[in-house]
Picture: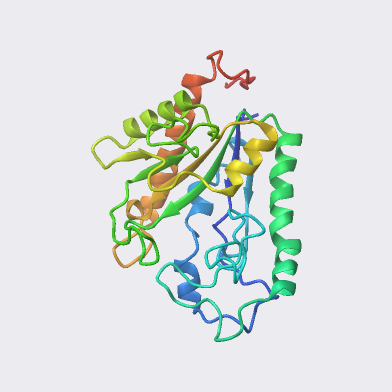
Length: 275
């Protein structure tokens, strides 16, 4: 029997499907939907046989983004739980056909809330010591961002803190203890030595998933962002050999981190034995 690490792996953006509630309204091609989703993450972080729980999501983040608060929807927000524009500024829906409140409510009920219920259930049914919210990121910041064109690190680790993993401001809690985030960063730096920068909370500090579920459970959460340049060509084509190798290296980095911190007294987590 294989022992499992006490990890919850959340993969919220790996899906590419279009929910029936918005079919016929969409302005994007299948290729554009793929580009604006995170399909590689379902493989990169699919450690099902080695961790306590893996929770992923089949619907594209364009139509239901589970890493946004449920009240951030159009027209209030263009980059909220339902997107209005893509990363390059393309309208998601045909002119005048953006989903109204009734459709958004159906999307939340049918997809968004069940995903978060599955995350909550993982804590109730498994001995989770730490949770990772797992993503990929474009090599450069896209046109719709304020830092458009800025080169990104190869790995970004977020705990809602500053660039050292500490609280960014007074009364603004982090989702993972700073020494743990720093240890995780060192593990990734060791794994990817000489290949690029490993950053903390830059450019991503973590999203709604980590903040909401950490607040509820107090279990540490880290958002992991992996640069797509590590497994894609400049044209955005996935190189399968790179994807396979990268998957192993990510798992090596997070398990080496856990092996180093799980014996410390800072967080009273029971560590499963390994044979």
